[in-house]
Image 1: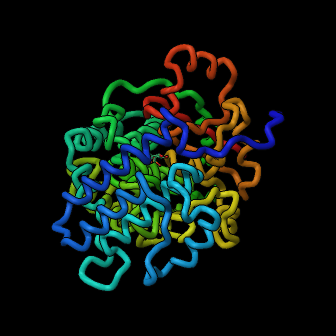
Image 2: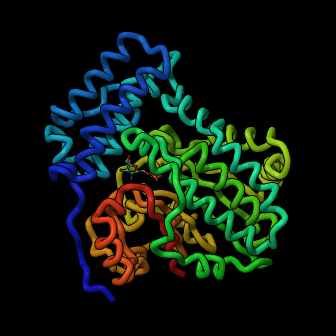
Image 3: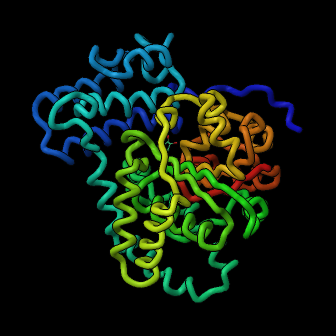
Length: 391
Ligand SMILES: O=P(O)(O)OC[C@H]1O[C@](O)(CO)[C@@H](O)[C@@H]1O
């Protein structure tokens, strides 16, 4: 057992740090992309200007008086207002940035822009890339392989789908989305499958991350779990509103399902079957306000805790869910995953490509070889991935 009891919370004020670059470079770049995505009017552009200035040079201000969740954020941000965005916890600052960006474009305000997802054009474009098409065509070949091989390939597909992240491409020029896949730095997939023996009365909660090219492989995995009775019921949890650029909401699930249903070959068959799983109640899409909270899962509310407690296993997708699952802190990398997730109300697994500094659950040899071979960029470059699970 590691002796770790606590570790520094990640802030964004360390010069040269990844967290700092997200606030100082990615967020301004994202504001520019959002400006170009819709024919926003002068009021929205002024609000985006104000957000850019506030978040890079100013101090944290409250949400506007009409915001439905103003009190909630005032509570979550107690002690942070009036301070530099760089000096408060990175997880909080990043989450609040997305909330303020929605405010700037009028997502929650009564009027024509209410409910218009500022990231939707990017998410939709993702579905129609050559790579996305090739992934669907590959399903025809995969269907000829033994079932166990299909299962493993779909699990890895869902894992590496997490690399297709629009926030990431904001400053990396999409580099992490290309190239050969690196070996996993932790692979508990055998342990994950052992939690889901075919034919058992299993239920799975899959907490989704990105839409588009991540969500489609997630749906393919879900179909496999249901079809081969690794799970009798699956709940797909998505965000209630646009978040972290590409995070999936119910509208994105519908887009993904339609996209699959229209495809040729095996992909089209799977798309139609997924509609049927939903119709029969074997696949349910759910959301919860907590998925957009700037808090670790250790602080989840009782109703969500109960949902996870009832599942045979909860699968957390992506980097943000990982940060919230283990705590957005600089843990010694060899801190056991089981120790960091001991509070979780049931078996839990993480499928994540590494896109921020947090990491636990490495063995010493892996950590040493990563540091020697790539310095610390392996933590944030999206080239490495992991599957971690605990019973
Ligand atoms: O989509 P994912 O895998 O949750 O990745 C989100 C990650 O991207 C970043 O927002 C940086 O763009 C990280 O800070 C964050 O953890």
